[in-house]
Length: 418
Image (tube, rainbow, N blue to C red; front, side):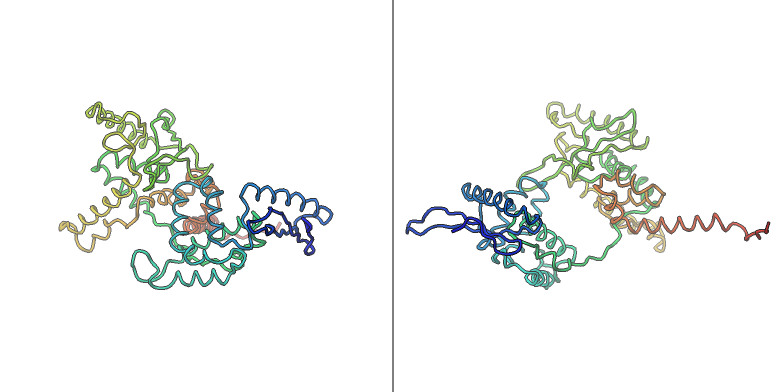
């Protein structure tokens, strides 16, 4: 039996003998590879290299027969060899939730090489059916959530192609679930100014966090991970290079930022720097009061009551309560006319919306997208333009109006012929 057999124009079957089983039957492992990407005169040489790698995989116990492996089997291999070593803890946790709750139960039993676009289409249709939601609410999953399932499945199957378990990715042969783009929730300039005024009556720790979120546009995890050494008071600069996260099974921990471009240094206005100085004085006072009970091992700017790391979602919960408290006080204030109350009611925007607020206001004030993208720590400018397309359209319209105003200030003058 030949170790390497040509099976088609660009296809080769690799065969490795693995001894005999207890019944004396010869054990053989086979694998078919596609070498379309290799020049014809180099294909046999490449096939020999692949045979050696195939043999080594078998000897080390790493080989899984692509003819017998199920989608669930490959997912386990993908998790162990790629996802767990490479992905951020929170991303991995979310992926495992999607896999274990719906993807594996629905598709895991199917042979990997038999998985077809129709299987995926039927799965997505099922996700839209009433009763599929884990929270018990009526209706199916949102198109955005279904798209998250699709992207994860496609990513895993792309890996299967790269590792030569599949010749092509079936997820790429169907249209991805379509999600209608909506404008990111944010406050307008007037509401933002109103919030900054309302904060004067709030605890300095939360006031400082909200001000930094508005002026810095950072993610919540980046904000709560800041240390005093990250602040350059003299030059009004803030270094962002880490993120604070929490997982039930892992607790609260520091990790690197979302991507390499998320490591950045941004400028802060003088008012924000002044507030940080005031907050530092306040925090030192709290430290003096607690004495030995203060956690000296934590150098974070924003901490829990004992000086230890703050729970990442604390500020989010506080901000939601802040909005709720304010709106209820307006509703119950008899000194404000009923028809005027809408003026004082704040939109229901969460803490992450302050990041969108910062970016949207900058864009509407004419700051170029590249600068905004760098302040936000986006990996690509296209990410910024995609998220804030509504604001960019508004800015583009204003730019058009400025041109019209520039060239239409007075009636057209006649051009005299020379």
